Length: 403
Image 1 (tube, rainbow, N blue to C red):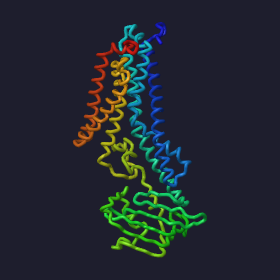
Image 2 (image 1 turned 60 degrees about the vertical axis):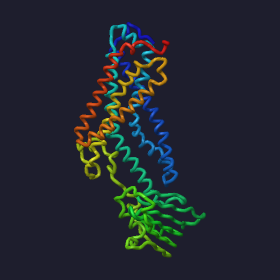
Image 3 (image 1 turned 90 degrees about the horizontal axis):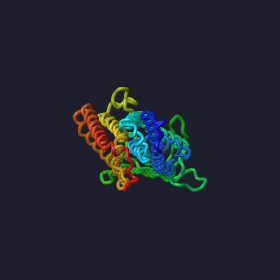
Image 4 (image 1 turned 180 degrees about the vertical axis):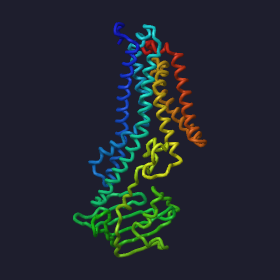
């Protein structure tokens, strides 16, 4: 609608536009979040089905994955700002601003505030919220696996652990003993297959240990050169080697016995890594060395690279509103269908350019890579601002109603 002149003020309208844009960004972020969670829920449901994880843990696990949507935050900001300013232009609101002798600078000031707000939000989410969420997700999954292992797994299920997989066969109704198949990755050269006709729990879980007895046991060590099985945690080779057969490393390739009793350490079955097992669980201050590294981990040479990628994503959030203004000047009835997809493609190309720039510049030093990244972002910002000012007359007048 056209704003009434008696209640019109450029600064007041800029504040209204800022608030409406922020609300639009929030709505788009919720929409993108819903799409992301619907896709992420499939993998979590598959985890619940394949492993002994109760359905009651679905919502908490899904909630811990919510901050990962910050990866798509620049696209959400671009779409939200574009939709808002396109709607305002077509409602002749910008003409009211121009009729008072104002340029496009009051509008750009509100976009600067939006850009700074999403920049800080991206740094906060990717630098603090997402790392703790990733660790909480892994911690909850390990806790559920641990409790399921202590209580006894359901028959006919795979149990996946760092360097081995256990399959508990279904058994007849009322039968407590059931066959078990175990595949262990001993090292890069050897993997082990364990078959047990019957497995019985002799001593229940106590103080982190439990004792099992296996009947009709066959243990075979096989060469791994042709199979190329890879351990998910190579540092846990020692635990895998002594898991079921502590004497099988002395040249023994095959073992068959009637009965085998083994005391298992539940800490070896479900190994709890402290926070910081991967750089994704490090906060940005920890990556930069401003605070102590989590879990007594040593500083990683890739820490600066991870921090720069987070900064690059935040800079894309800052540039997205100004790219939306430039695309607005190019939006007509003929270009409406592909203007926004083209802007998203430009933003993705900028993301690729930032990633390549970081990969090349970080070889010199992290300081050089930081200056190069910030300089590239400033250059793109100056280019966008110059083009917007040069084409500001196209911002004011509606273009969708003209042929």
